[in-house]
Length: 104
Image (cartoon, rainbow, N blue to C red; front, side, top):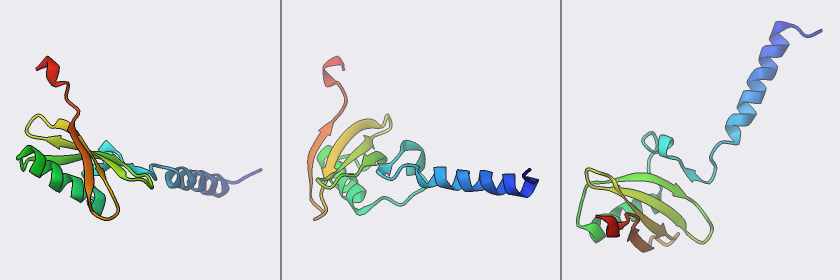
């Protein structure tokens, strides 16, 4: 028979293991506001600002890969979605709007 302390310890251990599995590939929308942007995310925020000529940009999320980090950026009051690929050398590419502009 297990005592209450053993059950609590087991539950806390399981919770810790689950937390260790959470989101290792990039930033999620919920965690973005609580974290400092990575160098790749900062590069895309910078270059999307230049491309759109709009300084009102926010990080929506990102997905890391060895080839390059895909970054999603919100632009303007409406947070229009843009994407950007950032590379480890600080360069970016593939900056484009994700808004279906044909319906505007």
